[in-house]
Length: 209
Image 1: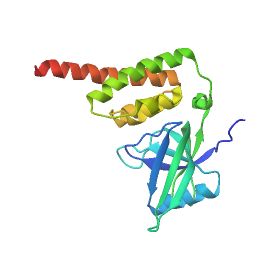
Image 2: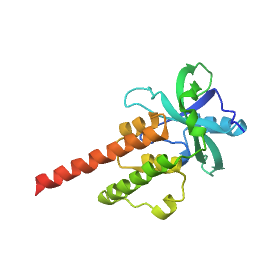
Image 3: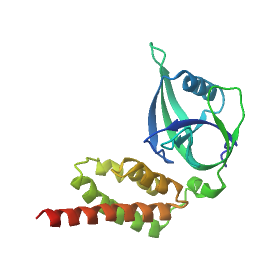
Image 4: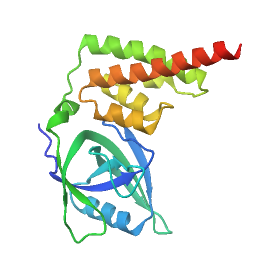
């Protein structure tokens, strides 16, 4: 059954957080305009878009991720706690002029249609397995802990998206991974970024000796 995805999406801009398909993201909503956004989403199809803000002004990147609210809870002090599951990436086409307190955009999912493809390939599995081994070493060098036993239970797309979300790399590098169309290209980009950091770290260690 094909998902019916919204063509016009309310946008929650985030700074320093990159949201990927097939990952979960808890949010603590307290700003009035975004409380209104969440209320409207809950009353309709529960879909909302998350996109990274650029460093200057109100500009946002052109690629974000559609999320669906799976849980929501209002607190006594007026906040809303929500959990989002990432559905698919989208590309912004244009901003919608509205009379709401939050922004809405017309989006296209065409470029990232494979995000909704549930098929897996052996070649993809092998590449992600190699990346996982490399990432274990990278995380250990940076003092980061991950429950690898639970991680291995995720499917291939979830693994690469999870690694991209939590890896100790820059937001710009994470955005580059987000904008990589296929899971193979995301794997390749993340692998190259991690290799760069490991190589740079090796050079720094040699210099210090």
